[in-house]
Length: 135
Image 1 (tube, rainbow, N blue to C red):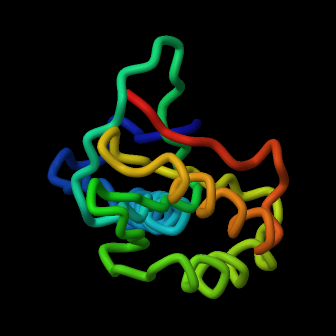
Image 2: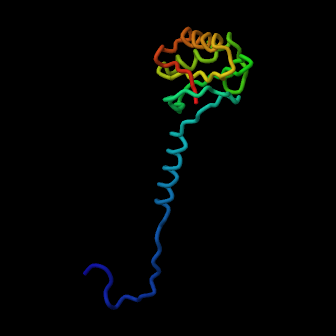
Image 3: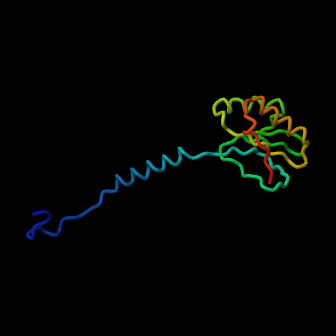
């Protein structure tokens, strides 16, 4: 009835069509590439103070670094205190819930870190969205 009859020859070649499985693999690959989130590091090494209970960096955040020489970096570029608003305001208008993380070196001046905090507030970051990163 169904399938082969007894008189059929056994010489027919059987093959498996893999093109639909390859299509699925490529669709999954494209999905994972598009949905990947990249973290843009500050570009300088900061020696952060050790504070208990500090949380890790969030994957989608604005990272600002204050070095021991009191220089402010974003994306590996020295921006200075006046450049903080210009760099992060466009990012905050695109996503107002994006957290701002200030990586202050333990040898940096407390006043500079606080001034960066104030500039982030002026740029539109919420008080609860700004944090200072420690070890």
